[in-house]
Amino acid sequence: MATLLSVNVGPPKDVSWQGRTVHTGAWKSPVDGPRLVRRLNVEGDGQGDLAGHGGEIRAVLVYQAQSYLYWREHLGRDDLSFGMFGENFTVDGLPDDEVCIGDRYRIGEAEFEVTQPRVTCYRVGMRLGEPAMASLLVAHHRPGFYLRVITEGRVRAGDEITLTRRGPEALSVADTDALLYLPDRDPAKLRKALAVPALSPGWQQSFRELAAERPPRRDVGSPGERAGPTGSATAAGWPGFRRMRLSRIVRETPTVSSLYFDSTDGTPLPAARAGQYLTLRLAVGDSAPAVRSYSLSSAPGSGYRISVKHEAHGRVSGFIHGRLHPGDLVEVASPRGTFVLEESTRPVVLVSAGIGATPVLAMLHQLAAARDARPVWWIHVARDRARHIFADEAHALLDQLPDAHEHIYYTAADAGPASGERRPTPGRPTAASLAALGLPTDADAYLCGPTAFMDDIAGHLREHGLRAERIHTEQFSSLSAVNPGVTATATVRPHPPPDPPGTGPLVTFVRSGVTTPWSTARGSLLELAEACDIPTRWSCRTGVCHTCVTALLSGDVTYTTPPLELPEPGTALVCCSEPAGEVILDL
Image 1: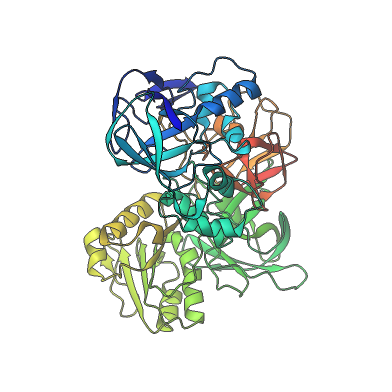
Image 2 (image 1 turned 90 degrees about the horizontal axis):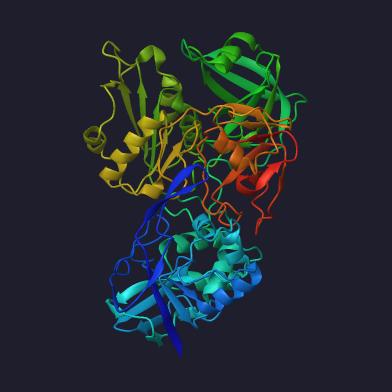
């Protein structure tokens, strides 16, 4: 008979860690007497990061006394006391390789259901002073597990634990954890996992994508679950950079020019997917080459065209507009990006502002070429007619579709009329004006433009009824940070590290526009990025969760801590790697 040995609680508190402040509930201590367990947690307890811990699905964390004995021996420590692994219930029995997802247990007056293994999180390592602990929990098949509260009630140390119902599929906690985080997955077990209703939604989503043989997308709301690269997947093409010939330049507006590229030997170029981008490496001045990414604005399979806006003080855009000429050779990386038009039968909503029209125009080209029968909405915001990029091209493409809707907004007070019979709407899209367009709520929406614009439009579309997972955005600035539990500080513009530069190979962070030599004083590429105040994404910091996975545009890395599973080719886990030579990262 299993037994509840200790009930451990602790409210969240701020803890100093590596120069940051982390708000965490990992510090828990045993309590005497009965404690009431409600839907969200144990009386007196709390979670600091509700995105990765807590809530109804993860109300109570369980860890075994037998695992304490194991870690005391493995780590050579005699100071491990109940609650130090962040668990609410320390139990005798209930091993991870026997307890199954969906099992139900009665403890005292309450009844519980097993929902998922522990989230891989750096804070257990922070609490124990063992940075690799998140990785060790997975590698040694001793994660612990979460419970959902079926019936509220009081529990106390000494209560017997009784199995009241066995979960379907008999998939153990240890097997479930390994299925998500370790290689050589068993397809039969993946199918079993998806057949367990009690399994938490985040893990179900990851397993659905693994079963479909594509890397799980990063869900910023669930930083401890398995994640994959965001906006950086590589299409079939070439490694690193190759020289391509700039065949022609076309002025689109007073500030935007399109550049057309061909191969140097006349061979066909690999087809890009609609919405992907090219990355250019340009010798601008005497410093290290500048690396910038630009969306392809051409139809898939019709060659490569990018369209670049000349920013008033843009060093690179100024070089492109003033120094490049037809016939020049330019170093170009293979098309990449996951902001692509997905295969579907649902309506399509394409929304852009200014130069953000480029990737969605490529999508419109694909739809028009296929004479796609789906309803298509084209919504674009420009300052005025003179700066309305691709106005005639987009209109001609929409005319080729059987069910197309075009809506143009001009923001300038003296914008004047649009070309032809099109009448622009003054101002910017609002929740009311978008709702008035009759957009279908089952549509897939693709947004590109300034970050604030995309945030506003995405909010309006969600308010209108579109599901969040069907609203796709593209941006070339730094991605929003995912640093679970870390207290937010004032945003600082990315910069070279403040200490003396290293002597190692150059590391370029493309989205942030920072190039700096590698220094062996840094423990990882992630630490270098953090020293540059570049927004980063991580959770375990030990190569387990893949939240930090980043596209590797050029070069290669070595792993200082071998990850439990290597990321897909063309990407790197920056939390546990360093450059093997000059590298260019999509960060």
